[in-house]
Amino acid sequence: MLIIPPAAKAYVKIEPVDFRMGMDRLVALTNQKMQMDARSGAAFVFCNTKKTAIKVLYFDRQGYWLCQKRFSDGKMKHWPKETDDGKTLGLNLQELVVLLSDGDLKKMSFKRIFHSGTDMTC
Image: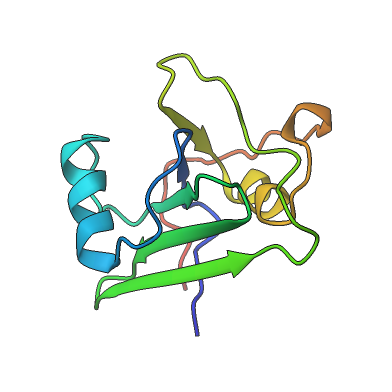
């Protein structure tokens, strides 16, 4: 079962990717083109050119997960269009859930999550 910790970050590659890419090519794309560590514990989100599907790449300390969702209603209506660097958008887990449901991130408001900097695992 795929479980992404609540404190994990997600990074959305705004530009579409070729969905013939498998796990290894998406890991290489994350490391080289996005200049991020695919093994960092963050989720990396990609869409296809037609915006009919998304893929999520995630490393859980034992191996990689590659999940794909195809939207039954056709195209995604709310895929992010702009970022500061024009290429990658950082999200928290709440925002990722909204994006995976094709929700509009611009219309959502979230309470800020406080992190004390201490590990709260039991």
